Length: 613
Image 1 (cartoon, rainbow, N blue to C red):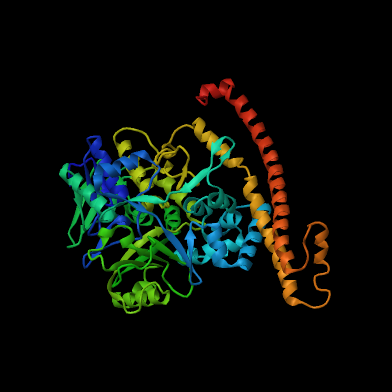
Image 2 (cartoon, helix red, strand yellow):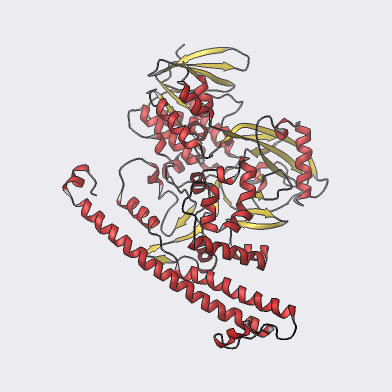
């Protein structure tokens, strides 16, 4: 039957609801079918005994001005400004995340810190020539040892596959672009200018958050849609999309009571997982497309929400658990997201997150056993007092995360090419595009889809195409200042400058000098201490020769301290000179390329193409 709507939207998460909301601004109507009992998708908020829980925790942070405007337009003054604190639990200690040099140094100890420093220097001068997977990408930026400590265990717990099978593209989007040089600057020196431009000064340390969780946002959005005459139907699963090879004709909707209805419309927007979408198409795609579709994988997810009889536990919004002896991957403290998430201020609500596959041991456990497991692991990690957990609930989410392995990209390209033949079907959102979209990216894909239906021309797949998506602030840059990168169009002068700056990035001479100096100083200090502890006649004879080059140095306790500072100065000078030489060579190559680009932009052909500003 025809509902009279201009568009059928499959899925009531951020992308689907934003599509419908944006359509309304163009005078277009919609009907949204959501298979679950609530809107919001992974951004919904669940309740247990009056306590509210996120599915993973969702900060409201964006660089896109239009998304920020939508949030305020929909929810108004119900947003809170919240401080961000997240840490890593490793070997019984807490480490700041993003990583901070002094915090990591003090927590890991001097010997491990030296190993990390040497590993980083090796990666700086002898990086992996290719970056096809997560392990290569992280090791090139942080060193192999830091990768093994702070990335490998947790990442493999999340995805259930080895790090060398995870796409480097995912790493570039999800990990802050902080190498140890930049971290040293951030920790010790603050903002500095590089090439006349302000470098990164801080990471985003505050974020917006709805008073009663992200579900409050999407329920408000659904209410506004209904008030405007649109339909948002819960418990309505789209099981079939009938098409004629060129256009989708109708969607078959199955409700919880078993009743089915076929709904026709001029346009269709899907947020359902790509694999489910292709299996719902009638007639089915060609065999080779089905084979590509079967290569797409997903990671399922469950949250064990527990109520703890304690007013304060830890200050973090969330903690990453890098302990291999427990199964929990991350722990949310919802009271620290918003005080209103907890009805009783004398108690605390935690969410223990487990990354699973549907049907595996954890997924199949009863709710009671999962609550018991979560309680035991909290106590084992010494995060809650023994016997303080008063009860809990379990939330299961199928296909929570598309898997970004080493085969997904090729498979997705083949699927996209075939789906492009269905001219009135658009895919948006994280699962809809099998892409690790943030919430704002998912919303922008829905905005573009709606505008396409209204007659504009946008590529929904161009949202979030930048290789790196960061949470950095630069001097003079507002929260939405870089949002134009999400909008398809020709390359602007600023975008070209960003590309050139990234391609010909300079070594920070001061930071590399400090890094080399500290490592060299520590190495000499340790070598001297080891010889002193070993003792014996003639001990340290060869090492003491360094006294000819380092005035005042000797194999003695006082000499160890003197040697540390003098060796650090020598190391600093070497690191500074090496980075200076590299920067000279890189600068020369950049100038050569700029000369070639200037000549090309002045040519008649380039002007005819519209390449000039």
